[in-house]
Length: 114
Length: 113
Picture 1 (cartoon, rainbow over the protein chains, first blue to last red):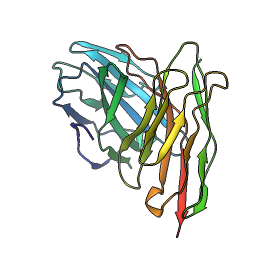
Picture 2 (picture 1 turned 180 degrees about the vertical axis):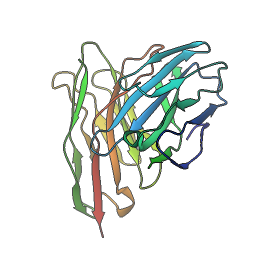
Picture 3 (picture 1 turned 45 degrees about the vertical axis):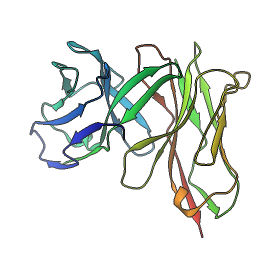
């Protein structure tokens, strides 16, 4: 997967705990985003960023914060974890080219909230 | 709003069978269309894409043609293998600086030897 690195791969949290999912890319992509994947629902956009210092909400932003202080990094913060946030999280970045946009995904972070 | 609809799975085929996974979309503009594949326990990989009407994307024996008249982007493969067992997602994107993807719910394919 074209240089998008996510950590951790697996995490178990207790309800009410906070944590940060890390995402980094070394391709100088301006656009980055976070999705969550739930059974039978496909992937849904949480937050996205079109460049350093700029973030915006996606379809399901509640309970999550993001920041984009550098082009390379786009961390996703869970402020107070809830069982409903048990999911698989994917970070993505995008390259623009003559053949249109190509969006690359990280390998995913499996999060369980108990 | 924009949306992507995929055929519901799971789809179970025998090895060397012909595969079709239907995908239709609703869009207010002229999006690019994508197929992503997710193998068990792994992340999403771009399988193929098409950026305008009548374009055909192809990769690893899979093909899909962007049909504006029927708003469809069906995925096909002539002869599936056990290693093609995965979940397949159809998605659309409007291009430019906006990289947000709208996904279908995914179709699970199981190929039996």
